[in-house]
Image 1 (cartoon, helix red, strand yellow):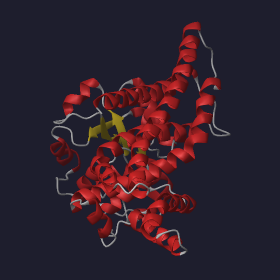
Image 2 (spheres, rainbow, N blue to C red; image 1 turned 90 degrees about the vertical axis):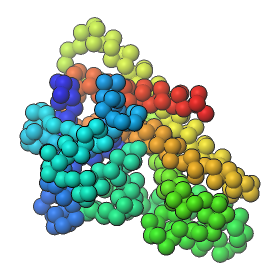
Image 3 (cartoon, rainbow, N blue to C red; image 1 turned 45 degrees about the vertical axis):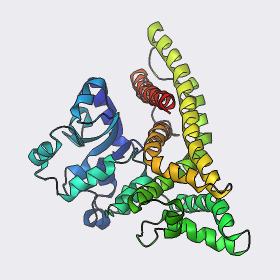
Image 4 (cartoon, rainbow, N blue to C red; image 1 turned 135 degrees about the vertical axis):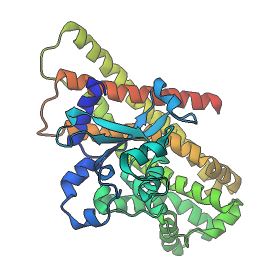
Length: 373
C-alpha cells in the first residue's frame, strides 16, 4: 500500500460504514460483545467478519486482474493490526483471477463455503448502501444481525410512504380513484418491498409478458430505483450544503503557495463534479420515470417491460453515481461533525483527491453511456 492508502485506511477505522465502505471492523468493535452479533454473523470466518469491504474503482493496472471488463470491484481488506490500521493490510478483489485459490490458501474456504456465496452477493451490488445490502442478502437467504445495517425504523417508514406515493398512479389505473385505493396501494407497496417468493405479483408479470427470472431481477432493480430516488430526494439539501462547505473548509497548518493554489483549484472542481454527478443521477432516474409513466398513466406496458429488461444495467449505473454522492455526504457528516478534530492540510488533500477521482471517473462512465445509448 502507498502512504496515502495507509492514511485513508486509518481514517476508515474511526468512520462508520458508507455506501462505498462496509466497516466490519468498527461493527465488531461496537457490537462484538452482543449475542446477536455472535449468533448471526455476516461472515463465518472471523477474519472476514472483521474486515473492511470497499467498492473499489479499478485502476488501469488492475483491470487485467479480471477475466471480464469491469470498472468497480469489491475489495476485501484484512488489517495487519486491527488496533493500528497505519500498519496497512492485505487485500483481495472478489472475482479476480485465481480468487478461489487465494481464498482457499488465506482462509481455508472453498467455492461452496457460505462466506463465498455472501461475497458474491455483495459483489453483485453497485454500492454497499445498507438498505440495498440488507435486501440483497435477504434475497440470497442470508440474514445477519441488525447491527450490520445502519437503518432506522424512521427511515424504513419514510421509505414505505415514499413507495406508496410513487405507485399510487398504478393502483389508480387498475381499480380507479376510490376509497379502496388506499389499502390497495399499501398492499402493492408491501409486495414490491417484500422478498417473499409468494409476493411475485403474477398479474403484473403476465401483463408485461416476462419470464420469471427476468421479472424477478427487474423488480429487484425497480425496488433499487425507488430507493435511490428516495435517497436523492432526501440528500438534495445535504449534498448542496457539502458542495458549499467544500469552498469554505480550512485546514490547520501552514499553507505554501503551491498547496494553496492546488486546494483553490480542487474546491472549484470538486464542487462542480458533485453537482454534475447529481444531475447525471437525475437523468438516469428519468429513464425510469418515463417508463413508469408509460405503464401507470399512458397505458403503454411495453415501455415498462423494456425498462425492467434493461434495469440491471441502469441500476448498476445509478448505484455507482449515487454511491459516490452518498459516500461523500456520509463521510463529510462524520469527519466534519460538530466537535470533530480540525483537519490537517495533508488530510484535506487526501479527502479532496478521493472524492474528485471517484466523481471524475463516474462522469466519464456516464458520458460514455450517453454516447452508446
